[in-house]
Image 1 (cartoon, rainbow, N blue to C red):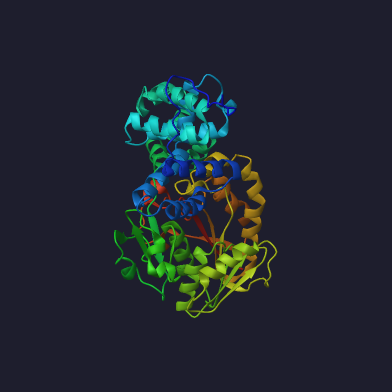
Image 2 (spheres, rainbow, N blue to C red; image 1 turned 90 degrees about the vertical axis):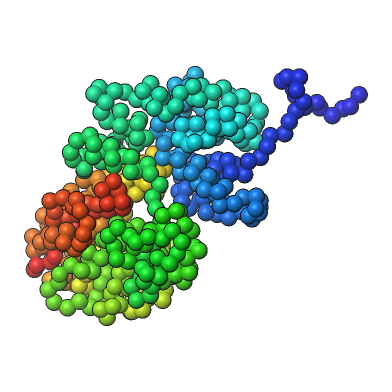
Length: 475
């Protein structure tokens, strides 16, 4: 009689090894990194995809597999709030008591069932196989039981069951239906104003996968050159923008590899262009990007400054991010300088610059399309942490610009506490300033509001929700 332990059986069927599905294993690994390490999916996915291609080979793990893995990760993160509500109705205990790896597998399954066209049987069986590989047979049975309950209704059917009626609680209804934290729904609604249609359009846009947008850096590349790429079309608003409509790989574009072009949301391009074209009183020789990391706006500003013979100083507090800025500016056709300095303790004399941009650190609520996990990490109290820094950076910017020069205050958040409240508070301390009307500096862009500042929106402009106020020193 053998001394080797028998493999346990739960039925009369022989034991079968679970099939390893590289696409779903990759998606699970990405979700675990986002949860365990507070990583960002857009930073985690590329190396995981490269590793999968190298391990499996391009014939086994092709572009369709990469696209499915990307959809599974981003779709699950975007709809996490909705799927949590559905899973809560299918699990006999609070979700917080479910082990996080199990919940990630359940969420991946819920997305396949409710958010994709994958057939029900295939979605359940593939997810249960994933559970057997990464969780073990025992917990795979739990996953199977829960997903069979999820499969009893489609997404609309579940929303009727788990979302409170709009008339009873509008914000909670929108939070569940459109998968945003309630406080974010409230903040966006306040910033947007208006009725139900506008906020629903915005929340829907946050859950759509954004196109990849490239910028042709002036004097180094042209939009016409980038338009020669497959599935490339002109940007909506920026003359330097080109959109890759079929999720093209930027690294495959020669101009991007050479640093003559880059990946940059069109809203960020418009902010840089507006500051560069704002009317000045006096010379136009020295520009400052006071929060330059990771370097996208600095590279565009540097190229624009070079066309006028102006010097760009790009300042970034964190040394490693200053290195990214230097890399982005490498090869700039005009003079520039990259320094590692605290923007609230300037390494330059007051009044040294003609144009100053401060794209301040913020909650990032304007880029939820690109970083869907951010909506679940941010808390209302984060606003209090950013407020002193945002005000300090704007004060430094106003002191760094000469009389007659212009400051651009920008942030990738539409939250009023990070936009108009900051500008209004700081300008009370600087009476010798005036707000410029930024709208004419975004020619052709509609729906810019009453001004003089500008708030861009994903659902109206196809950009991140960038905010811009332009301020001139008058004395």
